[in-house]
Length: 78
Image (cartoon, rainbow, N blue to C red):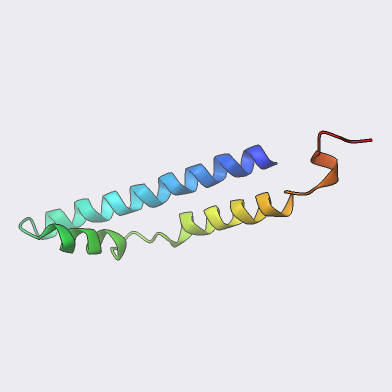
């Protein structure tokens, strides 16, 4: 389960990055002469929401934390 959660967290980080890049690309199409700061702000607050991949990352972190001290997953089982 931990391995799946790590893959899920990495995938959600990729999703956040893709949403930001797509928002920046859209802002560049709308305002081709915009300053870099304006584009970065548009990337974070743009039309593509970052909530969905962010929630996946949060779920992966919570599931990883829930199984952190699980006795069944320890190497020193009796």
